[in-house]
Length: 181
Image (cartoon, rainbow, N blue to C red; front, side):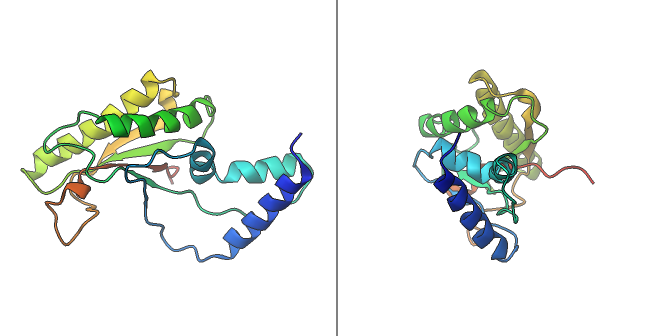
């Protein structure tokens, strides 16, 4: 059983988060840091804290929106879908979180991105390969493959719109998949 102060802190956090505007959220840039598994879990699956409160007999007043993570800026070499070592270290934490969600109905979207180098069709394929490489690595580490939706978006959503050729546009973003309407 969790300590009562844990639940009080969760209630306060959830109440404050619920009061914030619900504007579209930018991705959190992980840069070269390795994230904390608890922070990733709370970011990807914020409603789980609400479910824990309800199971303990508390009322949940809402929760903050799920977070999207950008892993890391400039992680991929030009024209490559090979996972760099730093990205692998970051993905190990995401795999740990996703292993604990095995069999859940909540999915995450792994979005591959490319810079503007090369033809549009090539960039679309490359971004899809990047997303699939991340999914494959997460699955290799024990994540449930049914929870991971790899999607390539090519150059459609640059991180640095002022310089479409910038290295930070070559990235992968991980966030909650929106259920089909």
